[in-house]
Image 1: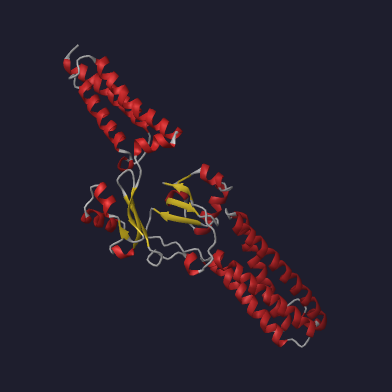
Image 2: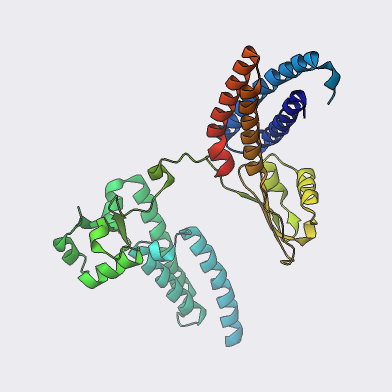
Length: 68
Length: 286
């Protein structure tokens, strides 16, 4: 597996985590818990943005593996 | 009118009157009401029986007596609510039986309680060893409550220094195969949501005896058919595990990459995820 595809896999995992966190942030009854989930959403979003940027750089460096 | 008919009518009428009277008198636990109320309950019962069996010849006299026994407790309740002094006068004050771990013999004598009785009451509060009791008090209802010494109290998560996620009470959304719209609405959910959840679990609404939604919005079901084994929801544990996995991968990337700025980025994000895990731990794992 190339580095780019490994990073992409991690990215996909984080996105799925973010989706589930979003469900919990909407259906939780306790406000404190909701705010923790919201914070978690922001943090994961920041990490996802960084990783996406990194994927672009990697794809630029290894164009032969683009799309994997 | 025939005698038996008369008794029948009176009994039915009095049953309804007594029902209304006891509803007015309130819904406190019968074992925890002050004595005067207990006495008035008995008096109401006896008077009602006497009237219904035609032992009280003049019905009006019977009702006067009944009225007094119903209205006086109400009046006393009202006055006790208004004035603290009146409340103490009527209900008395609680008596301290054990203070700083020592039995107050004078107070014990005043409440006419023997040592054995005190020990029996304490045992019923799970304090078998007198040494463990810091403070005990006889309430005005005669009930004895004990406060254990701090090292003998049950351990709470606070004592252990563990942060737990706040949890509200669960709501029952399915009862006997029927969806309860009211409790669903109070959670901000609707029947469509419930149908989707049930479909995901592969059960039909008719087969559910009881369904509860906890404060994080997870549905727990009990089915009529106990042979069906429902998978326990592990979604939260899965999220946590996935974050953990992502964090480990980022650390690996940081070690493998030769680009300095990428390494810094991976390290920073791995750190972020680690802090996130610490924060989410109480919500997701406990």
